[in-house]
Amino acid sequence: MHAPSDDARAFLRQYYGETLRTSSDLATNACCASGAPPAHVAAALSNVSEAVLERFYGCGFPIPVAVDGCRVLDLGCGTGRDVYLLSQLVGPTGFVHGVDMTEAQLVVARDTVDEHMTRFGYETPNVAFHQGFIEDLSTLPIEDSTLDVVVSNCVVNLSPTKDRVLAEVARVLRAGGEFYLSDVVVDRRLPHAVSADPLLHAECLGGALYVHDLLDLCRAAGFADPRVVTRSPITIDHPDLQRKVGAARFESLTLRLFALPDLEPRCEDYGQIATYQGG
Image (cartoon, rainbow, N blue to C red; front, side, top):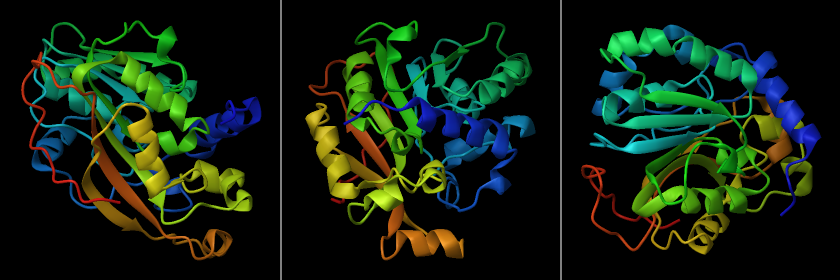
């Protein structure tokens, strides 16, 4: 796989930092979470500011249950919606890092830290936002094998080096830790004309992997037993983009990936383990 090009990164930065002002500006619904959030997420969402919520671009709810006291990283955190959800769930003894390459989104995330800590009743912030790339987490203040949980919401598809992303997640997770991943997948390998289209890529479609290829990448990175938590079809309500993708069918998939072997946990149970549905 090739390294992300500067042009591709520049287009994504512009798209998510300038072109999109709110989630309603998206051309498709691929980067939008579908269905009702789980109860523990719905309750926490009510405490997140509108300035953050209106610029959220995700396709699922990769938010574990019962993570009190955990150390968590959100890949591609954007304006911080999932970071602030997790901030409430890990509590004042836990900590949540967010990393994103788009400064315009991080400005919103950082500007609302004090507001959210006041809402949550925390004297000291339990979140930190970092500008960086999900393919290289070495610039973050996170040592190897120290995180309990990593989450990602519709971001891995944007990276042309998904193997590097998964390898980095495996590196920073402790043994027994978990990667909770929501992303867009497709029922076939996409032709170059689709995968290289800038708008399709930015809309989380062009970079979507054939579902079996994604599961194979997860296993190759050391996540031997991927579990499918939820899956739901994605409709492309944009005639021109629908014509471009042809017969390809996309869906939003949420996976739980475990850094095995599982050792004694450092924080509470990560929630009910879903039955693997295949893919």
